[in-house]
Length: 370
Image 1 (cartoon, helix red, strand yellow):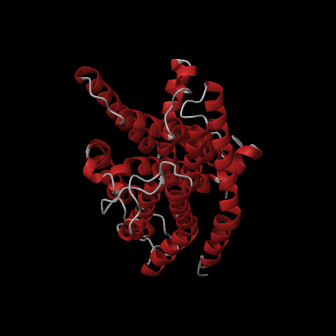
Image 2: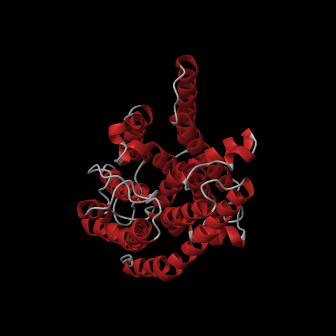
Image 3: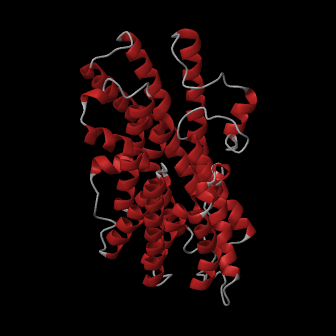
């Protein structure tokens, strides 16, 4: 089943991340930044919040995917294998393309490299197995870190779902739905710790615990719409989140701390509420069901992976052609060309790599026993 509204949010979020990376990193927001008003500048900088939207969506979709799954060791392996087959080919191709762009920039075009240091074999190997941040290696390309967090979340989600089933009496392959108390005991407790503590620690950033609260918001949104948990649970979770957000903003005002966390949490809360409202009004299949946006959603994973090296190559070459000082018109043209090239590259990556991977993963899914 496809949720057009959720897919539309995914597509918009991926595009927002592309805009942010172009605006903030490639190679600098000026002179384009000098040619727009402060409101536009602020709005463009807030597009980094697209990551928070994707985390909530991931929690929602995985909760939906596991809704009828009776977790066994074999099912755990099957589920994780399908996710690996679905995500890894495009991820590896994106790593290869980032390495190619790095090589071209250093040796052929004599442009600044997108990498902060020449890639080493251990660094590349760590990327291939989703361990670059855990092992302390800097990223070869923007956005790869979230795929590593996603893979960790898949492990947590299916093992947590299975534990919830084991804590529920009369739960078996014919009745795989855990009780509310079991779900909250397994998922809500660590999610609250994530909200109040883990997301404040830099040491947890390479781990799913840092982002677990956002995933949980998406999961509890689906459980409420699917009537696995009563409405008061969703209301309570959102109320706690809003209360904590107000507390964070108060501290920010009193002590003049520059927190990015309140903004991220606000975007995550808004995303969960928006999906919930669409679901309650039976508009998940209707809202944002525009052909161009649905296509953007389909290629969103490929876009997220491939855009940074594409944008880096075009913008650095463009700035050199403009002698390091493009006019605002030239800067806008480079901005638009980079976005268009990223979309084209994402379409190619989707057609040739991601779509076949999706088909392969779908064929791996075992048929349920009668």
